[in-house]
Length: 523
Image: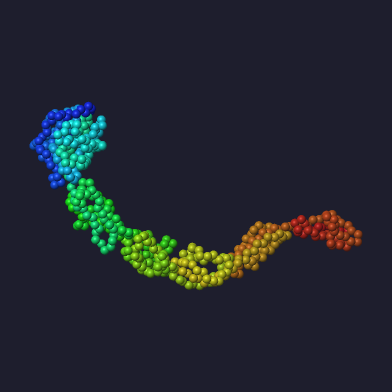
């Protein structure tokens, strides 16, 4: 509810002052301000009665309450607008105030701005101080708005420069604007002061400190209007939680908190131990070897770790639980206690449980051909491949535990034979298993597979070239007493013929390396 509203004409531009020295002001006497008796006016009491405030610069003598009557009635049709000079400033003048010479004084009020977009031509809502007995030249600017935006705002400014003086306040509206300015809850008062103490809430240990700061009176009280600041500082390993009152009600969680007391006030700084993160886990490389719990809480499904916010020096229980075929060995920091109590230091802590497989002893005798591979129990994870006979210990980790295998391994060799040769006319192939095969034609890479005497799969391969023997007949030959055949290269046969023959022959080697028989008639 706002009781004084001014609205200038849209488009007015000359901003002429309508203040005159002959204005009549409603006589209400002088209000003597004290800490116990501040002046306060929301104008509502003036409806239907005489106002102690004087509007100046319009063409009527209406008091401020009639300028915005709709704020005091439930009937929306009852609306009164001020009748004012369209081209002049408008003023609202207060009754006389007298301030004491000591302590501090403040003016405060609430304003509401409407139609801010019509605020033009550089005008500013402002407030002046008019000393008693002075003329217009004695007006002193007290406050001026720096921006005009729609909405409600609380305003306050110091009157310390006017302590011990009597004066009026003038609210000035610039006449060359067309926005609406509403004023209510005008208060002129001495800044109240109260005793404020700040202490640390009682604990068994020293957790921090608390202090008060602010502007004080000569007797040690703090001015409420300027605010009182309490500051909490936590000791090492502690953190500030909040300010509480005598009843333990939370007032603020800011370590440095400024407030405006309304009475003598005691506040208490509350501290708590600092929290750090305690994490217990199973390393990803050992997933499935076991699990862990922290204060009885296991990891969430699909996770191998669990964490908690742990306060300084608090005790927590961590436990490692080994899976079947595994045994808990130690924690990552070397401690072997299980379960184990962890007293939280002033830092984050991460502990990993280390598990080892149980020891399992086995013996195996194997005979294999050429090579042999040892697999884990899943049938596809390879442990080791052997290409030579082995008689000894093989250690590896399987799902069952730590396997210690005594292995007796014999590696047999396959007995396959590769045969490559050239023959004349035919060939009989005797294979590794004793079977035979005759050939009269050439073959290229013929393969024969069989199981040898060691049970190994063997393969014999034959590449055979079959060349042909040759025969020919030449013209009749004649000799005296004896005869040797003369070959084309001039050499003679080893055979010596001493008798005539209708079919004599000699044998030599043809170009393929096979027999070449030459027939002739001999006389």
